[in-house]
Figure (tube, rainbow, N blue to C red):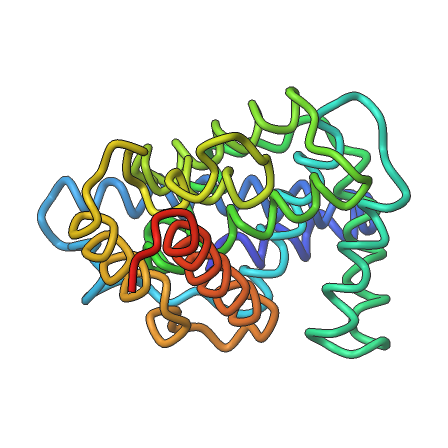
Amino acid sequence: MLKWGAAIVGYFIFRLPGAIIGFFIGTLVDNFGGNANSRSGNTVFSDMTRQKVSPADFEMHLISLCSIVIKADGTISQRELDYVRQYFVQTYGKEKANAIFRTFNEVNKKHEISAKNICYYLNQRVRYEVRLQLVHFLFGIAQADGSVSAAEVEVIRDIAAYFKLGKNDYESIKAMFIKSADNSYKILEIDKTATDDEVKKAYRTMAKKYHPDKVITQNEAIKKGAEEKFKEVQKAYETIQAERGIG
């Protein structure tokens, strides 16, 4: 793909920063070409015919989203950086994680990274269920320093919108990190006035939607995020069961 050629040229001219810039410029050109094909009817983007994303592409774009969230509130939290580092170590091993993190540090210094372009690229290549897990992961980064700031919520909300997540799906994930009086109901995407039968139906729907088997990816950390979210759905249902005495 053009992005890799641009990255190589950029590396020889400006070393690593040039490679990063070249990669993103090449990605934008590739995406533009993909749009032209789509308009001409030669390319159909859907969950069944979705383009594949290489591990390197996925890592680069995920790193960029991490950077955007970490910088959202104007300060770079060491806890949030450690959270990202731990993720990559657990997923790829220490040696590769260190190499990826060096790239992350370079990306973190850039200001031209576009969340919209990144999400557009990933939308064509990863399933909806994986995009749900990515937003879940980004909230995990934001919470790593003890609280999720309003600026971080705004940035993640924008990313969720670029990912074309439904409003209820976004609010459900958000409720797993930001507690409120009706938290359990928000996670199940229902109102507190829902009947017992509606609660049971909502639980079955959410359990099916968030089941880890729905997340088709080789990324272990994303799979783990799916398991955590599935547990949050179960916990929310159990809380409502206890409150209402539902058998």
